[in-house]
Image (tube, rainbow over all chains, first blue to last red; front, side, top):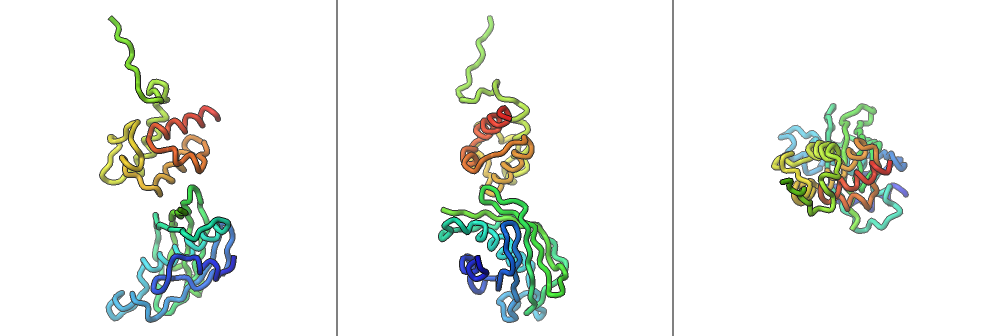
Length: 144
Length: 99
């Protein structure tokens, strides 16, 4: 499964798609990247005259690559045209801020995938390979 | 004069059930109860999602904890049968005994 095949199956679009590419994917591991656009809507208000990528957006980026993209790969042999996903758990630590036009690399390692719930250890790094965010995320994949 | 023992209507007679399994399961469920439900609300007949308001994501967590605690494996189609505390215990006991 190629990077663009996974991204095409993601249930997000602009302005809430935070995946540019998937660089590596295995059954229990994924790595992908995203560059935060300078004109992204949230920089207007976060913060006043001092744009910093909101933690919730970083978490979302980690979930889109680390949970949903990995889950789509794991479910590649099933018909997931009507897939819905629900973000269920997040426990994250924010260690370094991410500014406009910065590229981030997200890696994720599966903890478990049982009963359609995927839980992963996810790390977001900057281009200098410094960890900006790390934590564990979980979500449920519903296939009607 | 001795009174005859009360007969339970439920298929799983409380007297047949291992009380420790019930208490252990309650201890696991307790962790995932929403704010407005307490451990005292848990009864044998309680419906996990409809009465105890446990969401489907937490139901998975309960099943995983149950697997660890009782050293058993719950299959995909069995989670759907675990609707009430009682049906969960029935599945647990069938597996604990089988082990």
